Image 1 (cartoon, one colour):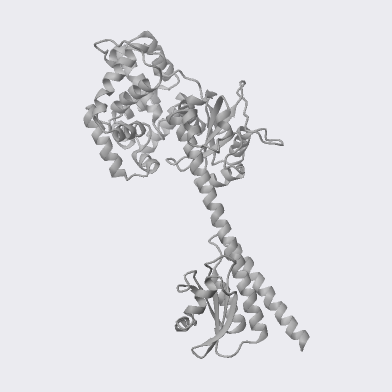
Image 2 (spheres, rainbow, N blue to C red):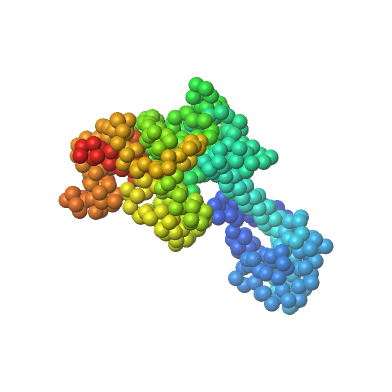
Length: 499
C-alpha cells in the first residue's frame, strides 16, 4: 500500500514537472491558471493566486469561491507583508491553506480551499505547487528584467548614433557618461546597413551584444524609421579594416554580416566608405545608396561607389552665400519646425513621426510652417532637392566670410563646367529608356502611378526601371530618397546645357 502511494506521489510530481516545462517554454510567460487547473485535476481542491495587494485575484480555478477572501483579509495581509510564510485555517465552512510566494514583500499568496480536510498527500502537492509558482514568477521577473535591459541598451545605442549624426563624437560621449562605447575611441568607421526581416534584427543584435549593451567596438542600432534596417557602425583602422573583434573564422563583424547575407536570400547589405567619426552622417548616406545597389546585385552586397557630392564641386563661397540666403526665412519659423524639416527632407513624414514620437499631423503642421517661411512647396520633389542642397551646404563646412552682398542664384552655381561634368558622371550609367523613365518620374513629382499613366506603361514597370536605375547610379531613390535630390540636380544641369 505504501509503495502504491509512493508511486502515486512520484507520478503527480512528474506531472507537475511536465506542466512546469510546458509553461516555462511559453513565449508569453508561464500560465498560472494552467498550473492551478492541474492542481485541481490532481486533488479536487480549488485555488487562487492573490496579488501583492492582498485583495486582487490574479488567477483562479473556475470553482474558486471568492467570498472566502473576505474573512481571510487580515491573514492574507500578514502573509503578503512577510509576517507569515504559510497558514491553515477554516472560513465559510471550508478548509483553507495559504502559502506566500517568494521571499520579498509584498508578495502574492496561493490560497487553496476544499470542503473536506485535505490529505497529507494533497498538502504536500499544494506546497510543491506553491514552490513551483514562486520559481516561475521569479524566472518571469528575470525575463522581464532582461527584456527591459535589452530595450534600454537598444535605446542607448540609438542615442549614440543620433549623437554622432547630430553633433559628432563629443556629443555622443556626453550622452553616455559612465558607459562610453569603445567605438567612440576609434578615429574612423564604416557603416554597414543590413536589410533583413524586422523580426531578425533583435536576434542578430543580441547575438553580438556584450555585457555593456554594445557590440564590442561596434554598434548595432535598430533603425526607428525603416523597420527592416539594422545600422551597424564598425570601427576601422587606417587600412579600413574592421576592428570589431570577433574570433574564429569570422574575423570581425563586417565579415559576419556578409556571411549572413550569403546564407539568407532575403538579406542585403550596403557598405559605406571609411569615414571619420564626425562624418557619420555622410557614412550613413553612403550606406543607404550602397544598399539600393545591393538589392539587384547577385551577391546582395554592395560598397559605396564613391561619387563626388554636388556640394564638393560648387564654388564654396558663392554656394554658401546662396544657401544662407535661401534658408534665412526659416529663421522666422520655430526652431522645432526647422529641425523637423531637416529630417523630413530625407525620410518619409511617417518615419519622422516615429523617430520623434510625434503624430503625423504634428509633423505636417511643423512642415507647413517651414513651407510658409521658405515660400517653397515641400511636397514638390524639385523644391525638396533645393532645400536639401541648401541644408547640406550650411552644415558641411566652416563659415566663409565675408559673403557677397548679392547672393547668386542656383542656376548660376550649376552652370559651371565642373557641375556639368558632375551631372554627366551621375547620369552616364543609365540606359536611354531608364533615363527617360527617370525624367518622367521626376516630372510627375516622383509619383510612380502618375508616371505610369503619362508613359502608358504599368506602375510595376516604372518601379522596375527605377530599381534598375538605382543599381546603375548607386543612389537610393525609393527608400530615403536622398539619391533623388542628386538626380533632380543632374537632370536640371543636363537640361540647361542641352538648352
